Length: 215
Image (cartoon, rainbow, N blue to C red):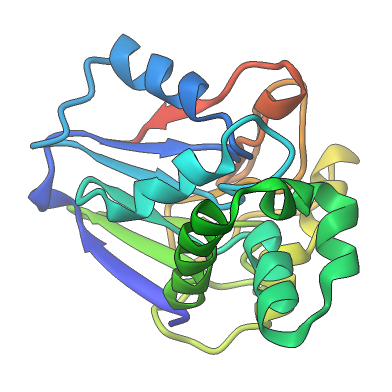
C-alpha cells in the first residue's frame, strides 16, 4: 500500500511521533504527559519502530492498537529484506541484532509483526477539515503532493536530499498539502522549513522523543 487516507473527524486529538527505535517507555511517558486517550485520540508514527533501542518488540506491538497508525521506515525495509530475501548483513549492521538475540518463541512473534510491516503505507494522508497533513518516513519526493499519485518509493523511505537542502537554507514549499512530517534523519531539535517538519530528534541516542499535536 502506497497511501493511506485518514479522516481527522474520527478522532479528538491526533499526534505525530518521531522515530521510536525501540524506545517504547519514552513514548508511554509522552502519551501520559499529554493525557492521550486511547478511545478518542490517534497516534501516527513516521516509521522506524525498531532497532538500536531497548524494546523493539514492544514498539512493534503498537501495530495491534486501534489508536495507532504508522508509515514504513527504512529500518522496517531492512528487516523485511533480511526476512524475505536473506539479506541480513545490512540490518544487523544497523541495529537489527536484537532480533537474533531473542528466544525462539519470541523471535517467531517478532517475525510475525515484522512481516505485517509489508502492509504499512509509505504515506499517510490526514484530512483535517480544509487542511491536509502528510506523513512519510524520509521525504515526499515531488514538487507537488496529490493523493495516490505514483512516487519514488526508495526516496520516500530513504531520501535525504530535501533535508540536506533545508539545512543549507535552500528548498521551497511542496504544493498540494499544508504540512509534511518526516523522520529518518536524527536531529538535536525538530527542524522546520516552508511546510516541511523533521521530527526525528534521536530519542534512541539520549535526546527527547518528539511528539507533535496536529489536531
